[in-house]
Length: 192
Image 1 (cartoon, rainbow, N blue to C red):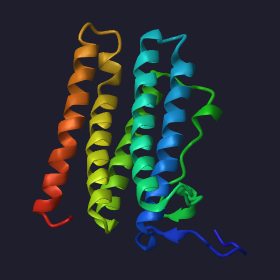
Image 2 (cartoon, rainbow, N blue to C red):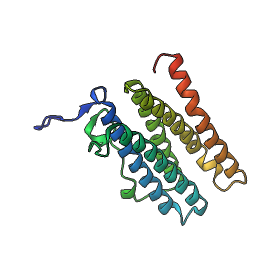
Image 3 (tube, rainbow, N blue to C red):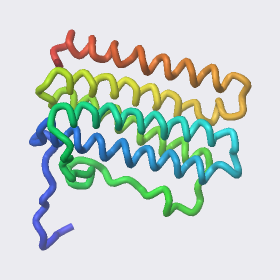
Image 4 (cartoon, rainbow, N blue to C red):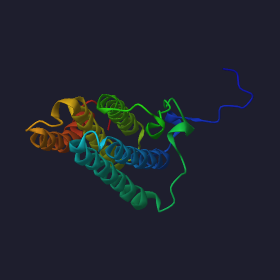
């Protein structure tokens, strides 16, 4: 589509560590709100989902806190006001709160897309970052997001089953272990 306005979005490859961290913080905040909205939307029809989505919102909030702690430690308290839509190559997300027909299957699809794109973002961010502590955190988060994607794939299967909590604990343990494995793999293949 032809536009009279120039495209002022930045290329991801041109972003600094400070800008990438700010972008990641904003993304985690948005993702956490999305999971809270899913818990509210699906709570009546699938009450067993509420705790799962609230747990995912808490996980996103914890990831945001870790990113923010590193950012403040490294760059101070003033965040760059950057969002996904300011960076070329990020696909726009559909606003879940605007969607009328929204069930568990649709939630599973949206969560899977969200977590897989977050994992890809963190892997790309790790290769782009210049500081080791930033690279390590991005690798850890990539592994955690990958584990969240595994959880999303099983969402319809585990909801209501007797071993849902056991599978969820296993996936969280995989996420914790996965961060260390992705970091080690990054070192071995020269990403870090």
